[in-house]
Length: 70
Image (cartoon, rainbow, N blue to C red; front, side, top):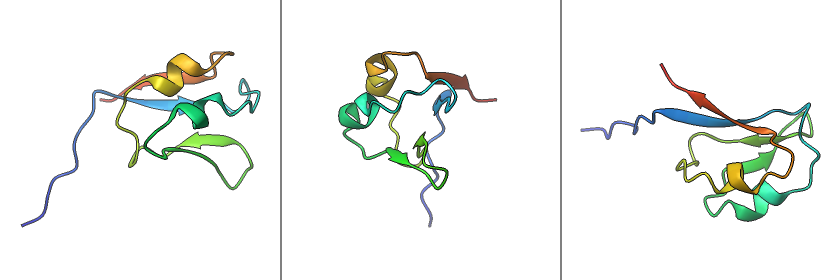
């Protein structure tokens, strides 16, 4: 028997063009969901993210977007 992955109503995404790479989101994330990706931009791993919104609220430039899931 396999455990189904929890479905969330929304995901968070970092807009690389708006991000100033201050690392505020990474410092606030206690789930290790925020990381620097292969393109050297900050990104959010949806598999680790619990949708607490701490990164969203910590971002001083509004680069983190809430994306509704279908």
